Image (cartoon, rainbow, N blue to C red; front, side, top):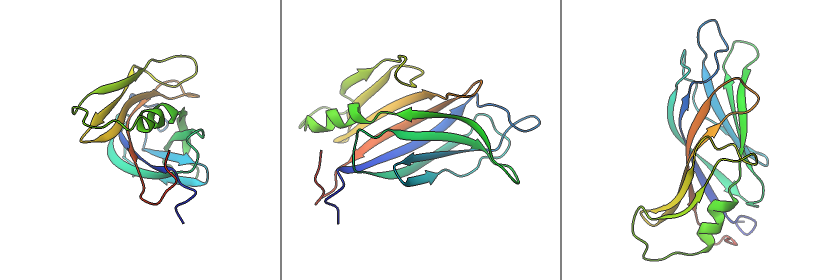
Length: 165
């Protein structure tokens, strides 16, 4: 059953910063992460353009070349308004996992990614080892909106019985 999966990515949606106002004075934001046909979402935070979600959403990864899509919406009665979107390339995270690093000190930064025109990074992103796990902290600048950033943490999870990376 797991033979088509290479692993899992835990996406911790930490917080939103300076999100767009979509109601009269504020917004009621929630975030959606998706890859392929999987779609998961955070809870709605009422009247807040700097929401603190701190929610962990776990995606099954079949092909790391497919980006993780992030969308933020303002919850409304009838139609939810878009508050921006972004795509996350998880291949750099997977490249570090493939190194199969052993006996690495906690907090060791293995790779750094800098913002450029091909990614949605708002600032430098580090891929590091924490408690034996490969993690990546990101601040994502939302596209197709006047303002807003989302802070995330990715963590790779190997699955016993999966085909692995």
